Structures are given as C-alpha cells and as structure tokens.
Image 1 (tube, helix red, strand yellow):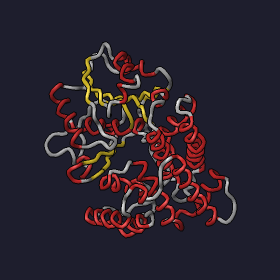
Image 2 (cartoon, rainbow, N blue to C red):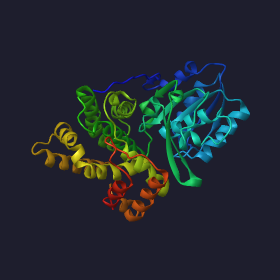
Image 3 (cartoon, rainbow, N blue to C red):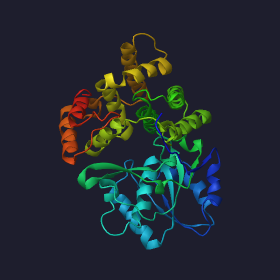
Length: 385
C-alpha cells in the first residue's frame, strides 16, 4: 500500500426531513445565494422545504445551471455574488449544480485574469465563498469532495479542477428528494457511481485488501439496488442505499493508498464537450473499451472483479472478458447504451477529433500506468462504434 494523507471536512446530514436542518447549518447573518438547475426543485417540494428552512436568512436565487455546468452561465452568478455581496453559497440539486457552485465560489475573489484558468491552467485559488449543499441526485460524489467539472461553450471544452478549499462545509442528503428523478437521471447516477469506483479499483494489485473489499461492496450494492430504483422509484431504502453508495464512491476513502486510472473520465469529458452526451452515458461507452484495450495491464484485477463481484470462475483471462461483458450488460439493462452509434456519434469522427485535441493540448498519458495516449484513445473510440 502506498503512503497517503486523508482528510475530509464535510459534515454529512443524511435522512428524511434533514433539509430542515439548514436553519442551523447556515450562519444566521449570512447573505446566501441559492443555486439550482432547471427548476425541478420547485415542482417536487424541495424548494418549499428550503424556503421554510431559510425563513430567517437573507437569500437570493440563481437557477439554470446546466447538467454539464457552463462557464458562461456560472460567470453570471459570479457577477450576482459581487453585486449582492453574497457571502454563502447553497447548492440545491445534483452534482452538476454543486460542481458549478464550487467554481462560482472560487471565481468570485479570483482577482485579475480569466477565472477559466482555474480549470485550464491550474491557476492558484485564493479566498473562496463557503458552500453548503442539498443533494437531490446521487451520482458524482461532489457532496463530499473538492472536485469540480465545468464546460465552456465557446471552446467546446470540459475541464476539471480540485481544491481542498471548495469542499462543502456541509451536505444534506435526503433520499426522498430523489423520488421524482426521471429514469434517465437515476440510470446516470448509478452508472456514474459505478465507474467512479472502478476507476480507483480496476488498476493493478497494490496490497490494499480493505480498499478492494470496500470498493467491491459498493459495486455489489449498486448492482443490486440500481434495477430496483427503476422498478420502484419511491422505495426509500433503495434510494438511501444508492445515495450512500454514490457518496462513498468518490469521497476519497476507497482510493487511499492505491493507484487510480481516470482515463475513462478523461476521454468521456471530451465526448461530452464535442457531442453533448451525458457524462454517465460517455462512461458507459468508454469504460468497457478501456478495459479491453488495457486487458493485459488490468488482467489481475479484472479477474478478481469477475470472481468476487460477479461470481465467475475459471481461466483468469476468460473471467476477465466475461466480467467486461457483464458490466456492459448491466449498463444497458439500466438504460445506458454502450456504443457510440446508439447516441448518433460517428466513432471515427470522435477518434480523430479527440486524439487530435489531446495531442494539441500536450496532455500527459492517462491510466494507472501512463500508457493511454492519443493513439490508444483513438483505438478505444474506434472500438466503441
């Protein structure tokens, strides 16, 4: 096991009725900007609960943050924060709303220059606005980490940044807020969480037996609970289990002391930037392709995954291949097709565009062994036609 430092400062408030605790979680004198997405929170009762909890707080609202939060939209919120002297941000929505809110928090006091360089050039982040979260879509794990992913329309880019400064001070997770999610968003959440785990687990043996079994527990739970959520969207226990899995998948705990891959995310972000495909949909396409292209490098862990999670036995290579096939079947069963053609994307076009962009950007090779460069990315995308 590798050396590591783990620190997670997020206060997690979990369970039905927990939105009411916003009253005491946010300082009374705070001037709050509530951020949200397309407005579903005003139809499913979440907004009403938030308003009730904030009755003694001064607050403003900013809606319209996209499923892939756009820089252009977020900068409008930055201007509101400056004009209204906002000193606390409350994200109400899914991980995309929270990702966008993290960028807003970092951009408000950025100083001179384009805040986009926070993402494009790893620019230093100064003082940030404090953030709270009410999560309504379990998927990204953003409620318990310092990650943020933002897109920019003008350049067709989707980039990420991480900072310990943008961890939420608290995150409220009420599984009942997920009852009204459309089937597509439920699917996306399960697939996203599943691949988050696999990016940290499916590398090479690192003598991290506890981390491996923690990861396998999350994967097995998602395999069990995901289809149940599609069948019975208002089953509280199912929704609670999925919500907790998504948080555990990317709060850093299963990645302690072990290598990570993240190539599926790197390639998937480019697919979203060029073609507008949902993040989880891009992962459903790319992840099996990465597994096949890196089969030899990942053989030991793929065989372990097949044996422990899918109950497969036999020759390690045969088990590994069957495990990849079963993973694809699971994604498809959940409603996330695993081929580019099913999203009307030409695989050759994607291979050329994305490999060229990575070459131009001079990006370091991806993967736990640093063996996935532009050429390998093109191979992966062509294989997903």
